Image (cartoon, rainbow, N blue to C red; front, side, top):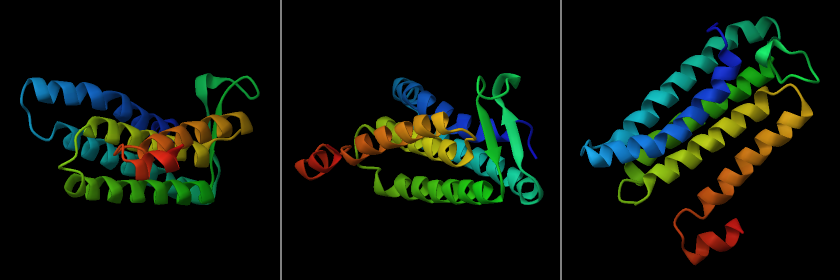
Length: 166
């Protein structure tokens, strides 16, 4: 198992979401085509590797990860069991398929840095939901996931998409 894999499974999509506007800006400035797509591909492959590394250990025992080394209730704890590892694998796999499909389907759209940012925020929230070990952080990750999904529904800014997002 990769060291710190549970927190990396949540942190990698968050990092990708925050780096996406920066990479988009730099790729526009220096005229580098496909910067957003390359960043997305690198981070989703890394996410799959991290999640798949947890599966063998999670089959036999529960992986607990204490952020900062603090015990609950003061610290945040991530717990990965066999079901959580399966759900994380499904989320990462479907996320990889969505990102791969987006490369072709969304290429004529504008504002793709926002699209990929929202997509990675949904991925981070989903990973947090299945890997968290306490109820408070479950709520926080649900909020991240739901707010990003509302914004992604309204991404095209048509009346057919804005009304359902509200």
